[in-house]
Length: 256
Image (cartoon, rainbow, N blue to C red):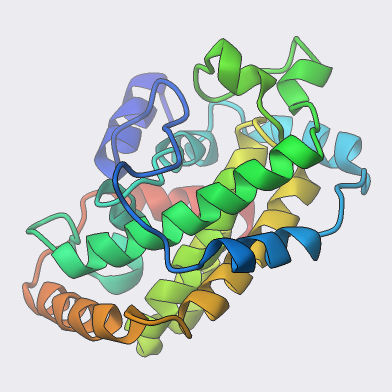
């Protein structure tokens, strides 16, 4: 794909962020109380190099391809924009109208993901691939603070794991595809060279655990009931995303 066409595809998928967005939504409380976050952090273990150097190097093959631009688009994990990553999975356009319950539940899961990620990154710092290899390209601009931030666990993978479980529950008929897209959001961080592959795998597992525990918390059931109605209404609108062709090309290239 020519660079101009790739950029257009990226813009269709979602706004191409110039830098990684802040993880924590403003004035949003997560589902998990502090003691549950601490318990998750204590049980998360510590990062380890699981053949990451070679695995990360192999991902250079995706630079400036459809999968690279998809990774750039996946940098946006804040709702409501992040819901667009599941448009093609559900055959609709989730930002085609206000979805307050969906935005609320995604924001609360993102808050839990951000709090846990920041806790672990501070306790077990790991340099990013672009720091270990200054010649390595990231698919987006990073601030100095983001460059210095820990790579483990991959923050967007934590969010992606939680989002994948959320959309699987909201649309059971598309559960497998929803979980796969949540995983792709995480993998995009390794493609983008902002995180190591094992940071992504650990992040996805943590995100799935966050969703599992959040689903048992007070208020979650009410939020889910409202979000299910919004998803059903969105799917009945008959809208589709113009980004789906580019998304299919990117996933075929990655062999997914």
